[in-house]
Image 1: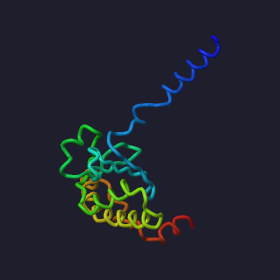
Image 2 (image 1 turned 90 degrees about the horizontal axis):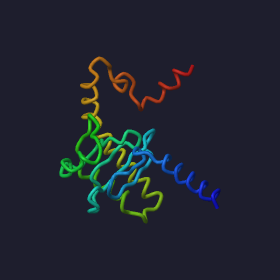
Image 3 (image 1 turned 120 degrees about the horizontal axis):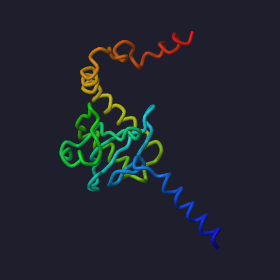
Image 4 (image 1 turned 180 degrees about the vertical axis):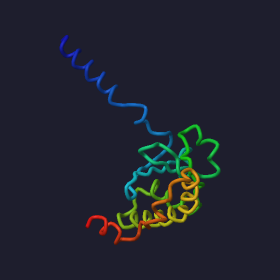
Length: 157
């Protein structure tokens, strides 16, 4: 009996060690998906059917937010230094991903593709912000565009 209690106590203690505050999820309904090399999460803080913010899963920083929710979100998690307000179509598309459990794979991929286009529309403002934070560094994107497929081939030769 004593051994069983010791094993149970050890398991409970180890389970407590396995979860850290970094593993905690914010309140509300959320969903995370991979976009390129990032895991991006969308969240409906007040569970009203509309996504309120998007954040990077690794840094837990909000990078896009609904303007109407900004004052409430500052207590949820930190804003990225270059966070931008979410456009309405971005909010609508991300809400589809969050709340449409019956989306087919092709429909889900179509929504994700539209979201990627929407993210790209916000990119000039984000790039300008990042450049102002790092004025000594030239943006790699300006030097070598991401969509220039030949660049990676030349570096490996």
